[in-house]
Image 1 (spheres, rainbow, N blue to C red):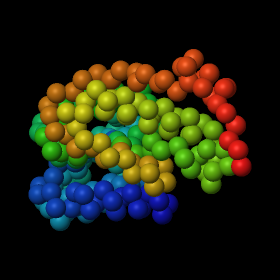
Image 2: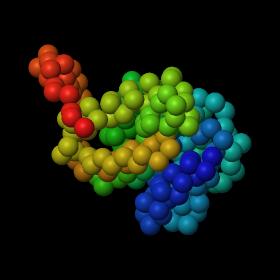
Image 3: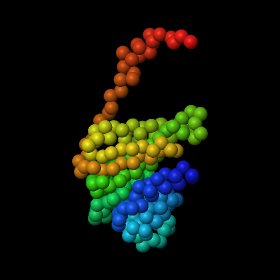
Image 4: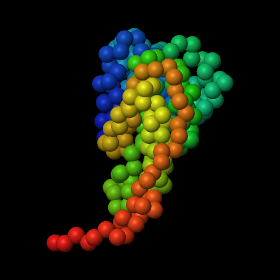
Length: 208
């Protein structure tokens, strides 16, 4: 709970001075992020569009909020609702690397130049064996998500910036700097090449 609140405070500090922001939130859950975004909208004359496959329509009655009861990859439907470019995109729906890739590539097109994108839950360190949140499934899915974000960034260094906050389950902070977006490629890993494996096998034992 406290870790998520810290992430929300971090996001709020980065967006609280944006005038008349249009925010797209993917994933509502209990509405904690929704309420934070609405605070910013109330202060800066903005508006928030939230999408969730569950009916979260009772989270708020704020007139600045529009809730869309739908899967966020229902692009034929949602893309037609987004009439203007958005300032902020928050991705916190289905935590699956392929799903995150799909919604990222679609909604990136709607983000303004210099707009911000936040992706929640991509750090695995708390979930490793013996970690304070020891959970093999979450460790695996967050590792895969982390790697997917790196693969996308590696092909798009001139199209967006990437910072990763490692607190708790992590937060990717992205700033769009170009309209173009290239498709990701697998990053070659030489760690387990035959050459490096032989080095590990025949490495001299350190003397005390």
